[in-house]
Image (cartoon, each protein chain N blue to C red):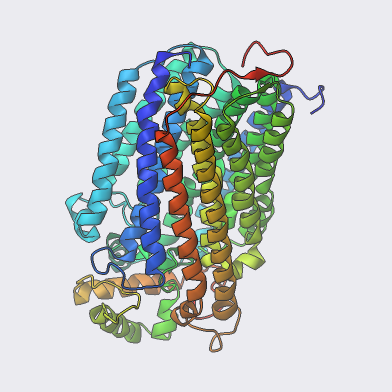
Length: 149
Length: 471
């Protein structure tokens, strides 16, 4: 590096540059959270049942195998759109599908990936279904590319 | 080693390496579960093994960063550590809390663990990488806070070098961003947005400051190049890291709810994120070419060069491959993500910790010019075995990812293969990845073995040209 470029100048780029981009990031975060997201995350549908479902999702570490909106583990199918894939967009159909699925686990087919049985009650499975249905309706810029997730 | 209190780094490094070994064991379990689906089921289901694998990584890297800091800061500040006793107490607290948490994952059902740790009153568990019980998260906060206090009391008292300033800013950032781990709203879209404040702003933000500072420190020591030159480079590198990386967070906001402008912002800024990593490569190789001394610790020099190259490939190139929104739309959450994650973490953070260990541990063991030649050769065998294995792990996962995208993502609904049907097609790549993982384990055993090789320590170095006053 040329001698004219001093350490002081390098430090100013570091401090000035990072301060500027921290502030820009905060401004964008305010815009995203306060203006844009209420329009996109269908929060008016965010019921107590959905929140209970989210806690069940967390307390059973579902994200340790599955992905949700593409984030999580890649060992088991994407569940951000499972409401559309397995329920065809119908709440009743999806609820009974999920109930049957959860109670059929594990399949114990030798050599195949196994999902544990989490011993959820029917009400809890309904909560989980409500959470997955709500999640499927977040505007996520049309991801995933197709129904398979 | 100029200050007695630097020695407190030793237990941190030792414990880090023990956890590293544990991480790799569980990595092999996971790799096998990808092909033999019911391996260890129901004793250790995939989600448990994965949680152990990733959490061990995070915790051992934190131990490594703390060890590096305790070693570097007194010498840079030219003063003893504020309180070695506090460093020892925090070591035991962190080691006990970390071990208990991992044992909890392994021996207690996760939902039961949530119940036992009162997660319902302050729910923070069950989110990727933040699976720790809330009480453990508070423990981490206390340990990091105490650590930061100790370090800052030391740094503020003594000489203020750029290495120290950058390192301490990185550590403050690490601590502050950790607070977002406690924010878990019921709205999944908001939860995910702020979750990235911990995950992305750690690994693609403040951790790069820590990496840069450690690299600069080791290069000052090994090459004898004038500190002024190295510090100027360090400032420019960390400036680039933050200028690109902060708005670069947007590449995680494409498909989780935030508005469309993030597609542009995230793509443009994250496409620039390879820059600081590329500069680190140029930095390391230029400084080594201009070296004023031939430090006999060749192994440490190899790690220092290796970490820049592998970080550039893993974080830079493999990150860029799938960071543009139109590409990411197809690849998001596929095995391509896994490929990138493995090489980026290994290249940037595993290798930088092993670099400082390679430099500092021989000194703390009374071998100021490095280990014996035999020990160094064995260590370098470990380096090559682990690094080449990681290259193959990455290549096989990339191949799996490309095929996965081809089968499952690109065709229209109705035509596309289902997730599980697609996975069956990837088996061959998963097997090869497992074999590469076994070679990685072998490399790790060789590497760890190098610590137990005795023999004559390296003799004093040859100095090239006039030695600098501050080396």
